[in-house]
Amino acid sequence: MPEGQTIKNHYELAIIGCGPAGMAAALNAKIRNRDFILLGSEFCSPKLSKAPQIENWLGFPEIGGEELRRRFLKHVESKGIQIVPFKVTNIYPGPPYTLVSKDHSIEVDAIIIATGVSVDKLFPGEAELLGSGVGYCATCDGPLYKNKNVALISYNQEGEDEANFMADFCAKVYYIPYYSDLSKLDPRIEVKKGKVKGILGTEKVKQLDLGEEQLSVDGVFIIRDTLPAEQLISGLEMEDAAIMVNHKLETSMPGLFAAGDCTGQPFQLIKAAGEGGTAALQAVKYLDSLK
Ligand SMILES: Cc1cc2nc3c(=O)[nH]c(=O)nc-3n(C[C@H](O)[C@H](O)[C@H](O)COP(=O)(O)OP(=O)(O)OC[C@H]3O[C@@H](n4cnc5c(N)ncnc54)[C@H](O)[C@@H]3O)c2cc1C
Image (cartoon, rainbow, N blue to C red; front, side, top):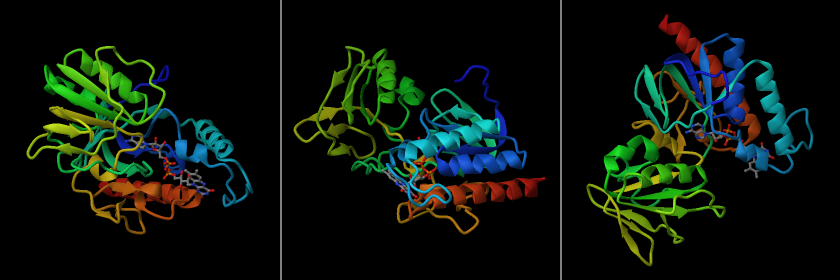
């Protein structure tokens, strides 16, 4: 958490995701003078940064993604908006909704989900066993796995902190990295290089199938940059693997809006930013209607 930054227990609005959609939403919420929080990961946004040359961003022909990313961040900062490092692992239905990360929970009256899309497919068994041994935040659920065996499948180094935390009280911790530069794993953790074929079990997780071997585990945690939206909050209506929204960017839940890649194709900057701005204005209207 940056110095001087504190998190309140309650906000009118939370914007989850700090890509073009989330930042555009934040600008509009700020201009409308709302009590909001912009939540993101450490780097906003990896996707934008990777775009080598952008030819369709109005007014900036052939600008690089990284240059545009820096300009977005500068613009947001110039308005006094802070991006709070807070990876949402769960949203409990509302309103008011409760947002949970590994360290905090906050209550909000309205939400804009702007989390982008996960390019990684769900593992076989993941959706079926979610909440029955499958989770996305080891440090949140950790105490339930005291003296048990767990596996962490991680797409980034964030998983190493989570695995180290679990190593203190689990009987066995396996770590399956989907990236190359492992840096700070506790020596008690066993690294497995295989690829996950599936998570097995009927009512509860029993095994992790790595093809050539099956690990007996009670819990499996999956650490991705972006969580699948339907796993963030249960009951959210989806269409073609995207969050279902109408032209006001309203989802199937009251006070819950979505914007950007997470609402489906086309995956384009201008759509993401346009939807972010629109979602913020609609959220403001919604908040006004509560008064
Ligand atoms: C290589 C490449 C080239 C591209 N070129 C172009 C181009 O030329 N023109 C164009 O229009 N588009 C291009 N795009 C697409 C464009 O980058 C995306 O459409 C745009 O970034 C989508 O914005 P977004 O805000 O919806 O999502 P993202 O940019 O993906 O941002 C989502 C943010 O939310 C954060 N987040 C996710 N989950 C959580 C959570 N649970 N809690 C907190 N934060 C979370 C993520 O870390 C991320 O920072 C390109 C994309 C790539 C990968």
